[in-house]
Length: 256
Image 1 (cartoon, rainbow, N blue to C red):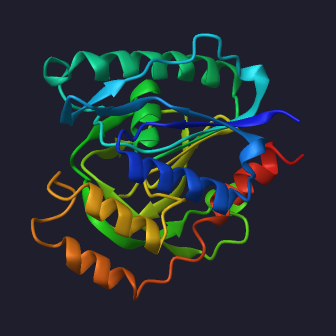
Image 2 (cartoon, rainbow, N blue to C red; image 1 turned 30 degrees about the horizontal axis):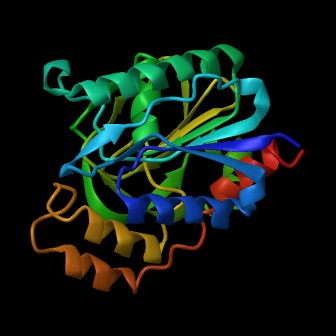
């Protein structure tokens, strides 16, 4: 059986490991079924910087059943002149991957930063108009979403965590909107038949939000001093359905 390729963009050691374990948990994958590639890491000489580790040069889509791309602290919509070379190199390689993914309509699921990459690559509009602070929100499935296999067995309105500085302001011309939110309308879409992107985090649960709040405190994802409140409030939130998206994705493309 072909493996699932999991690409991770978080440079911080604890959040990236927590994200990986959550991907396995909610997709019900064993480690032996996946190939994990971590694309960034913290600069050991300067803890507030990250390094790009480079993209696997021999990566071939036909070696995998599907691809999952995790989120990260990078922002695609930043002006090019403000981006460091490591981010430019990372984006170039990810866009090259998307060239192949879109051409072949290859099964792909990108979360948070993943939606920004797909929007930018497919000529949608990415901006900070619909940014959202870290919080659990209601996600509403659209009529088209109700027909899609990835949203099978989810309620029409489900809760998921968000936390992003940029978002899809205008869908790519070839995208189908699958789910929406009150303050950020484009929460999930599909390109062609097999390429998916979500603004919310399908892998993020209460334990995961505690890890990320501690890791990203002071980085602009929530107001200064609100981290502890977010963590305390998370114990009152029931995040029980969103992980089905990962399970449905794997069932459709890996467990055929």
